[in-house]
Structure formats: C-alpha cells, structure tokens
Image (tube, rainbow, N blue to C red; front, side):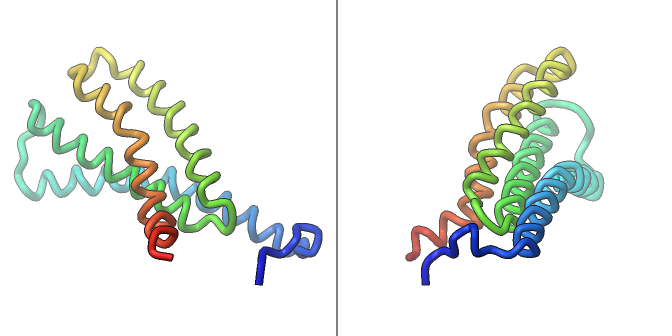
Length: 139
C-alpha cells in the first residue's frame, strides 16, 4: 500500500500532522536546556570543579548530547517528512548557535565556542540517524 494522496487526507489528519510538527519543535527546543541542566547537576554530583578546560570539555559533551536529543525528538515526533524536519531544525539551531557564538565569543575560549558551532551538523545528523537512518539502512 503506497502513500495516500494529499487530497484524500482528511482535515482532521492534516491538523494532527501540523500539531505533531509544532509539538516536535517545542520539545526539541525544550530538550536543549533540560539536557544541559542534567549535565550540570551530574557534574555537581560527581564533584567536578567549575571552570577550566576539562570542565568546558565536559560541558561541550552535554551541549552535543542536547543537540542530539533535540534532533531525535524532532524527527521522532514528526508525523511526516522526517528528514525535512531535521533540516528545518538544523537551520533553526544554526541561526541560534551563530548568535550564541557571537554573544559568547569573549566569554569562553575560542575552541569551545567554535566546537559548539562546528559540531552542530553532527548533532542533528546523529539525532536523525538514531530515529530514521538506522531503519532505512536495515531495510
């Protein structure tokens, strides 16, 4: 059974598709601070000292995990066009990341701010791959 033509999709189903896309976007953006807060709390539990390159590397790991989590949520919740949703999220993340990098340029070492920006494609790709890519490859 192939895809259903758009003209045969009911209005109710279209509304559900749109609502799932909006929910996916909201949850993807909520995942970023939630995952980062979890990383900060774990650092406190582990007794990791604040500041320094080692702590920034640890924080970079959580930034990357937050991006992967947000991407996987976006792609996993979207009802249709999962790859298009990943591209849209990448564009939004990139715009925010470029802005944040510019704002934090003097607050952090260059390697940290550039790594946050340059790992973004991998974060979104990995989130997409965890939801869609493995299924496509296994078929």
